[in-house]
Image 1 (cartoon, rainbow, N blue to C red):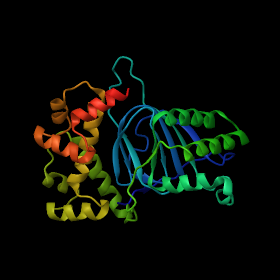
Image 2 (spheres, rainbow, N blue to C red; image 1 turned 90 degrees about the horizontal axis):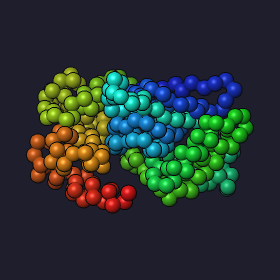
Image 3 (cartoon, rainbow, N blue to C red; image 1 turned 90 degrees about the vertical axis):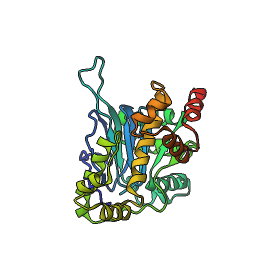
Length: 290
């Protein structure tokens, strides 16, 4: 699929950009940019798309997205009338790999950072206790000024480069060089699926969103995404079910119906195929680790 090219704004006296994003879904579209993006989610949760990886994100997550890797984060809807409502927000840093000069990454001492940024071209997420330390370093980048801001970003990258709690996201074989003309159509399919995945989606209806007959749509979607539409739909549903299981507010059967399945045996089988665990074991292991 071909995402939209996004131009990242910079202040004229800064070599990279860092900001607090106080609104959800500001870039609620499939997009990419030449800059590397480092994001720390403080509040808010939803579905994350990075390359061909689909998963849930939430507060405390730290994600690094490499240059020109398509991505977007779809926040869940929030009721602003709800008592105690707080708008989702995040800290976002955009920088070029060579922001400190062409030779920096070729220095022997910078090799871990160079290797880390190469990994980030498929997207990475920082987890566990290292995410907490990385969050503090990202905040330090935001607070510092002048040369100390650059030093703080290098310190942050060094820490993450040496972390053992880094997980890759998009697959090695993911390709994203596609016609610009398909961008609007792919976004329409994504948005329709995210809005309707909790009910049964007929192939004919989503094909109609793309302006195609079902057989043509199946070939089209597989060609531009590398996966079938129903694999894509399964990723969204299972990701959402994982979130519900971790919240522990619903029974496993209620989670099954809430994420779009109407047959518990089918949900149980698919969940285990995707995660390697039964829904109940997935939930119990999380609770035991807290």
